[in-house]
Length: 89
Image (cartoon, rainbow, N blue to C red):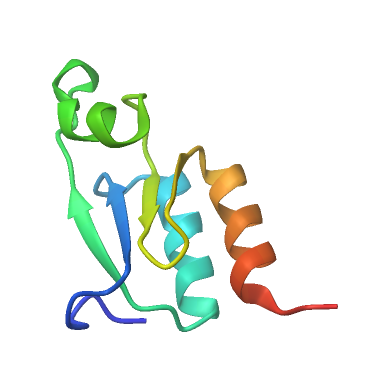
């Protein structure tokens, strides 16, 4: 749940005060998944780090080292987390 975990498998690329990013953070916390936050440039054209990992400059984006999945778009990420870590019937 904390960003203090030692080398967590999940990295979340996000912006400060981004409601879409916070939606993903809430889901990560709900499932008690350790993750690392990487805050990126607010200027869309400067988001080269995110473009390199996901192919887009949009946030949020995650890289899940547990499964090898990289994705963006909060709705897709939340669905992925539910399907992968939720364990709900």
